[in-house]
Length: 274
Figure 1 (cartoon, rainbow, N blue to C red):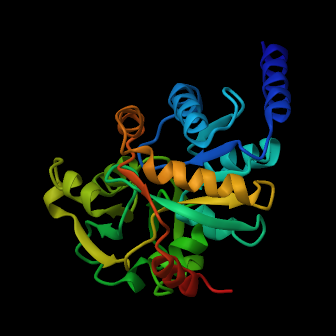
Figure 2: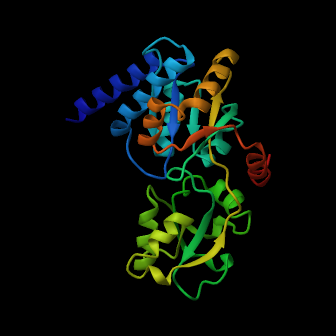
């Protein structure tokens, strides 16, 4: 069974490499969870429609959806796509190393967290400084620099905090309510839902982030020619405004694609540094 599994993995990676092209896409979005296999039909429908809008040959592009940072990095390495939709935390981490250029961004009530709150239950925890030596469970656990520098604006040195990476925000809520951890990070919508859970009324906000950037659409390196970039941006900006495109956007929880908010990314970049 192990040999079979390894063989399937090897074939998958090999086919990914063969399909690699500058018009291929990596999609790394985490808020709703999910998995690569179940998301693939939606990615494929998006790509087939984009091919129509851009004039690219039918069935000429490929892409993949990933939730974990590890899987996202692996796909970027193996497929070397020309563009990507990335969580802001991973965008800042890879911006220089992968030569990422923002082309636009995603507006979505389901996929984007406009700001994050550090949430606790223990009344003894009154400031971020009180988290020293405590347990923080967060969906940003595998991108600690973004959490510390951008979300917390440098107000807490995570070196003194026991940080655990989560795949779903709900696990952090349950951890705080059960006493398995001391704090978690939630956006406003997640916090409102958490307060409806048993014991949720005791949850308190210890700190709130500034406004956070949305999910950017980025060119990866220089593989995607300028003409293709222009065609892609035009297609994305109009994608959700047509009947067929609106249906695709809805099933992918995308409100619409809009021009990049340069000011928001500049503010976050200043907090990130470099």
